[in-house]
Length: 181
Length: 122
Image (cartoon, rainbow over all chains, first blue to last red; front, side, top):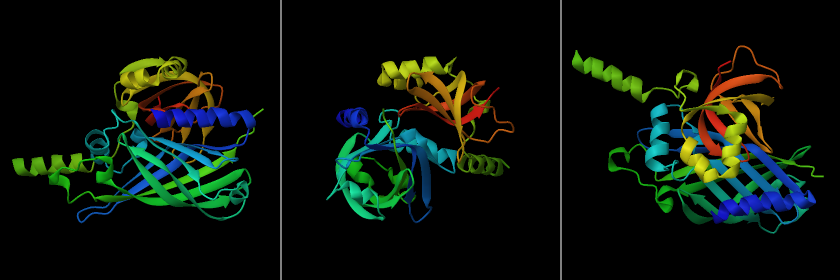
């Protein structure tokens, strides 16, 4: 709840001075490599806000937005693993490290550190973000690993060969500067 | 024979792709304004009522976003709209400003209420 509030506050307070970058339909993918089967899913329901002045970042995504190739996988993911009825969102709130606004205007990498919440469990995450300037803002790409057990996601023994203990998550955001009156 | 039939059934179930909401029975039939307002007032209550349910929603198209998936955005209440991600591209795409009826599975609220596996009904 605290993190959701942070995202809302960031969205609203940044609006006052008009110095925010927003992505309303970013993409998150995850890839699980396991002996029996590789599993991947894509989610286009990702909201992200970056404060240009402070380098604060907030990302939230709807867990039911993950689309799998097989409906059964999608059902198991939502019902048995991430319990998306109980925990409908995953969130990240953090700050770009050693930040200056100029870093968003040139291609490069920048570290981000903050709190990642999945399945109601919050863990610190620090990862590198690739920044690619665009005409209207910048693209941000990040890939990091999530240890499933860290977020108290239980994998039944019967399917333990199908699902990796560590999944790779990739985030692609096309953040656009919003002109606020 | 029973083994073969069971095997076919299991294979069909395991490899079944996610389906469009078009053929599903709607748990709720409402307008985009009503849906957006419900979430704008109380997101948790909105989730308890609508999350994961098939909704049939009528409303005016604000815009259509290209790309994959194609997304129909309906006017809702204030800044909260209803975004419907289409499972299959329609043969005929209605224009912004026209009234449509859509179906989709509710995945919750970002800035807008989002429906997955959507379809334009009429």
